Amino acid sequence: MENIHREDFTVKFYDTDFRSKVKLYSLINYMQETSEQHSNRLHIGYNDLIEEGLFWVVSRIEVNINSYPKNTDKIIMETWPSGIDKLFFKRNFRILDENNNELGSIQAYYLLLDMSSKFPQRPSRISLGVESIENRFGQDNKLDKIKMPSKLIETSEKVVTYSDIDLNMHVNNARYISWVEDFFTLEHYSNKRIKLLQLNFIKEAKYNDKVTLNKYIEEASNTYYIEGLEGGSNTQLFQCKIEFHEE
Image (cartoon, rainbow, N blue to C red; front, side, top):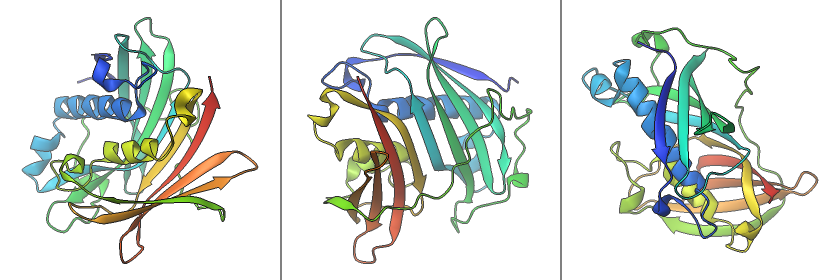
């Protein structure tokens, strides 16, 4: 079994936006597909773990994009396990064009949860079967907690619907990316794209839950922050940090 795995994708029309560039939400779906296929090869995929009463969830994710592929572009998503940090299984990804030029990278922290209790399990409960590759292209960033700045600039309300829910009966991690993308106007994307995004998942959201989205800005660095709060309790569901670059 190989510790580096690749999946090929062709960017489809429905994965792109009004500028014919792939949506970040779509790239995260490609990431999930690549991770799933590699996990299946390593016998730690969904069907393997469900027999042990376990399942994977993404806990934290950082995305860096240098160049967004366009409609019909052929790309490669490359992944490898990149170590363990306490309860986190770390997995890295590279997004490549068909000539192996790097378009971007993703770093993800996964948790192994017990299906009944939903409590995180120790990494020693399973074996990856291959060696992790730590810091393959230099020192990885540590994905720490994200603190919201003081300047609140916008609030929005939403309700979790059918299309948000995945096999684990909670909001799929890619849908949170879609919520974040949608929290900016069409005009905003006319000459800007997300360059850096870190999103920390804190508590699961389920069908029909009410969610409050708050957007903040740190003006000195022109960095946006978004948090999702559980309706009623104001418990934080996720926290996100975003930097844009002009095109």
